[in-house]
Image (cartoon, rainbow, N blue to C red; front, side):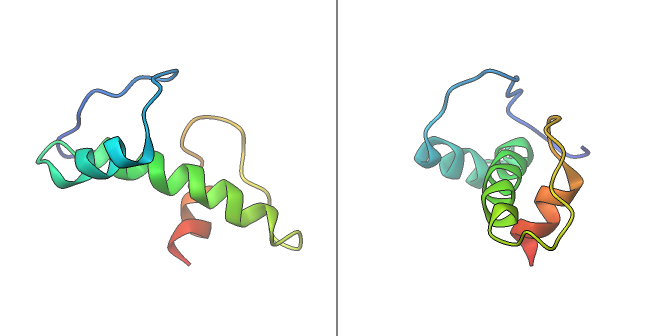
Length: 68
C-alpha cells in the first residue's frame, strides 16, 4: 500500500468508529483498507457465484466486493 498509514498491525482490535476516524486522518490509508477488506468479505459471502476472498490479510477480491 502506498501513501500514509497509521501503522495498524494484524491482530489490532479497533471499533468501526475508530477506523472511520483513522480514515479521515492523513494517515488513514490502512484504516480504509481494513474496512474495505472486512466488509468485502461479508459481501462476498452473499454472492456464492463469485470467487471467494482469500483468508490472507487484505484480499484483493474482498476489496473488489466492497467497491462494487
